[in-house]
Length: 354
Ligand SMILES: C[S@@+](CC[C@H](N)C(=O)[O-])C[C@H]1O[C@@H](n2cnc3c(N)ncnc32)[C@H](O)[C@@H]1O
Image 1 (tube, helix red, strand yellow):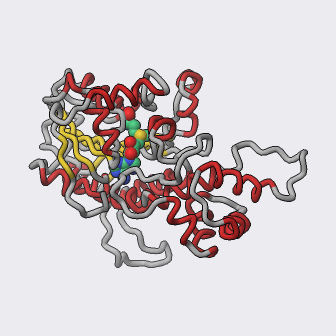
Image 2 (tube, rainbow, N blue to C red):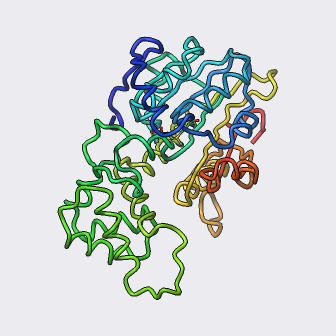
Image 3 (cartoon, rainbow, N blue to C red):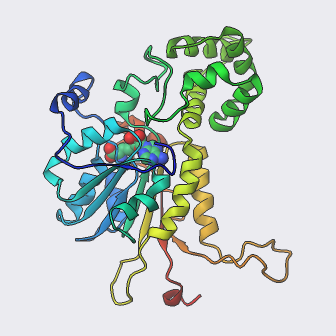
């Protein structure tokens, strides 16, 4: 669903088609997705009984389930995901908690309007666990992975217009280079873009992965080691572009400021908290910069004697450095190895007297 569109409400327990959910579960693996840093998320969000939380990327619902259990099953969750298949699966997996969860299809960039539609003005915590899930990567059939041969789609929300094939086949070399450089940090963006443009039309992940590998490995000596698959960065860049991931993150972070609860003074530990798990440096940089900016009063140049920006801090960083998974978690879930969790708390300016 595009930003600004009316999100769909999926009532828990109504649109379940058990066969589909079981297919997702049984095709490749028993567990569709292993949630990352769940213990840390629950601890740092300071889950409270009866609290209201937004899980902006509910996926297979692992974090939501942990939040509900930490609240003695008394919290309410607004679970958002762009991917209707993920929502259907969560609906099935979390059916014991159906009273506690409201599922909405859409982007967390639209979480303010989504909350309005369910009559929620403020929440105790917001979780964004960015990127894609294992089930999207491994069994969605939508071309997120270069390991499988699938149509080049990469849309989390199948209603959005632009697919990865559109970008690969219709963008000019300059536009493609821009995507690969800015969303994939791909140093060979120009060469890859040229090779792609000469080989069009490209319709499958296999075709694309082979072309990109050829472009990346060209002129490399056999001694030079390749640490990751040569198409990793290109696939990441296309996925980010197709799903407007960085723009959504910027908008979603700003929206969180309007939703996090500033409580009454005599309740302890009850400031709204934001927790974001990033999986690559582009996302993490946006989160880090956002928390730094929103934790700072004046943003004017240091050389300027008088503040003219009138910027007022609205957050307090809870994690000065990002939390990372334990070695034990990395061992049991290698996908977690690149994750970074940053947490911030809303500031009550009267209490903090600033
Ligand atoms: C890493 S998975 C989340 C897994 C989840 N935390 C769990 O425990 O199962 C990321 C999910 O976020 C969704 N997603 C990514 N960007 C989104 C956005 N801007 N708005 C809503 N959902 C998004 C993806 O479709 C995917 O299902």
